[in-house]
Figure 1: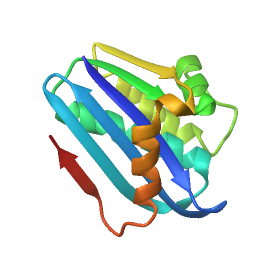
Figure 2: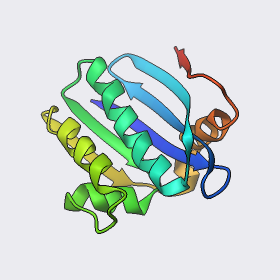
Figure 3: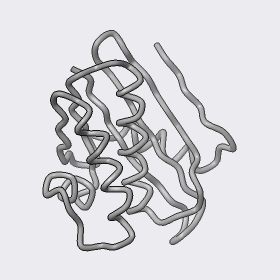
Figure 4: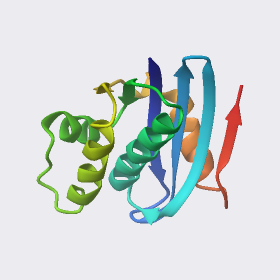
Length: 135
């Protein structure tokens, strides 16, 4: 099983944005800080989930457990829908990706338990290109 801790951050609404992803399990320990197009924090959180699932797919796993401190993202994923029209296309992409795993869970965690992903997302805001560190 892979555990993915995700976070999105924006410096403004919209403003410079980034995503942070911390992956562990199955012999992997990966830190990803990736700048994204300027957006708001909520959309950055959805983008973080989409990118994290792409990363997990590249690692050829079948069981993914994602942790996010975004209640909006977690609720939307678990319900399989969102009322917000802006989030619908990316949620559709996320659900399509999730279907490619045998098991894919997305759970809410408090911010204090998501510090690694938060730090990566905040760092990504100031980067010009993607930074990946594998241990």
